[in-house]
Length: 359
Image (cartoon, rainbow, N blue to C red; front, side, top):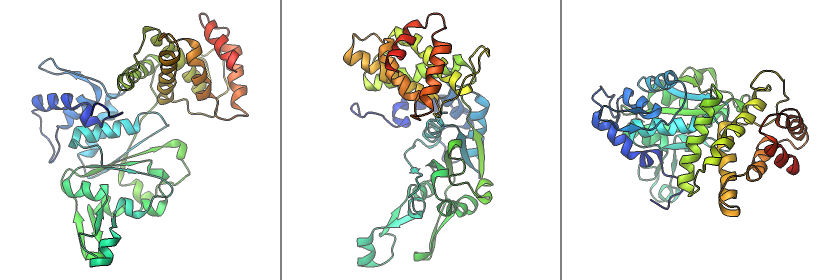
């Protein structure tokens, strides 16, 4: 497992999950590994009664996590909704890992997905040889989750065509998955539920039907509320990814994280942090996840092609690539921001020169 680029949450944080189980005396829903209270402690981080430190997986409003976990104790499914890069998939994975110890029952939503990916498929060699039978059935992650009482995850629900989305309605309302070819059905065991994610940039792609919307409780994950919170998130994730990629986080990177996050927040909001100057907004999302990517790319350049000390030259190309998505409009937005904000900001002359040279 040491050579795996990214371990599943239940593997990476197995020690923390075991520590929580050891002190968790609260009531647990059937087939849950932890109580709802302990799941929230795992997500938000805490110091346990025995002194063990549980790291924060989500840095934000604890009430949102409490609502999400409480939803999963009921018969309603959970929809995590928000702009790209607000940790929807990250939260979904960690919720499944903490609740049932298995975050791998995932259905990836795409425009080309079929009903079989959600319901079940067939092994056609077996089907031709023996006809419809349980042996010829190919179990989907959804069906498996129902059979064993675990959490099934659906990524990018609104990317799935509407007619395929509607195959979820029977599962969500009746908790049964009919198999008419065999004149039988699969009934969900206690502990089964669904966590779906969707981002608002896909609004209008494949809208959820009102029948499907009623079967989900929606929790909107916002962008970080403050500069300090976003810097904390980026620093934590860069540090974690750096360990996996063997890219050390140098002290110089901490200052650059603050500058990258400041740029992203200002361009995202269309105004400088002091509210003194309005800005044009580029076409990209400039999410927290993209800020993490910019930092990792810069650190990689400094380690492999520099002296190991992160410089603005290492950072500039990734930063510009994150901002400029539309080749016509975004360069205008970026140049204006460089000349009116970065150039005039005290202590940012080095970043201005590096970006100006590349721009």
